[in-house]
Length: 266
Image 1 (cartoon, rainbow, N blue to C red):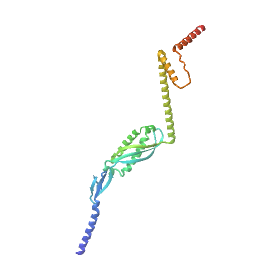
Image 2 (spheres, one colour):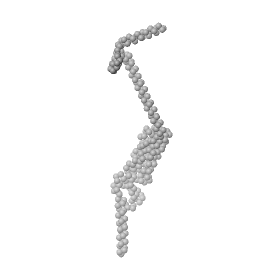
Image 3 (cartoon, one colour):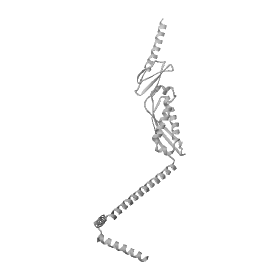
Image 4 (cartoon, rainbow, N blue to C red):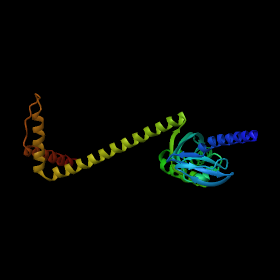
């Protein structure tokens, strides 16, 4: 009887030791940004969390997954644009898990799968446009990348928040060609602005000449103003103003002489 009793005590001690180990492992605590996918005997049971989670020993297994936004750096991709320019483009993808069940069951590694989808989509989208479109319309490229990547990852329970192109690395010869083009464009704008300024100046001078020619008093005032400006300067030049009547007398004499010469010639 005593051997049997001792055997029972030993067996009970083993069971108690096993329970002492397994019971604490049945209690899990998940943070606010974490969720636990529970599998019972290999079948999906529930999504739990955050807070205290109680698992049935041996029967339940939990896979923990984060729900925070993840910044995925897409490595540089070698692409050829529509106008046959070879460039390197990289980007960053911001996404988060919105359905933990699909993210664990529908795809083996959602991080790796999202990275591959982002790389292939980046090559496809950037290769469909010209280099000028890629440089000048990044917002449109980002929007199209976000739409396509989100469409591919939606069955995995992934929501793409944003996609941003980081760098577009150009060949050195292309950089030099673009620099020459920009310099030529600046020279062209400078010449156009200079020509417009000269044209406007000529217009104003023509209008001023018409006004002075039609109004003798205005011409006289302008004449006096010029003399005042010259006299204000500290120079040794002596200015003797002549009345406008004398200038008109000499002008009339010149015209009469020209008319006499023409009549004699005839």
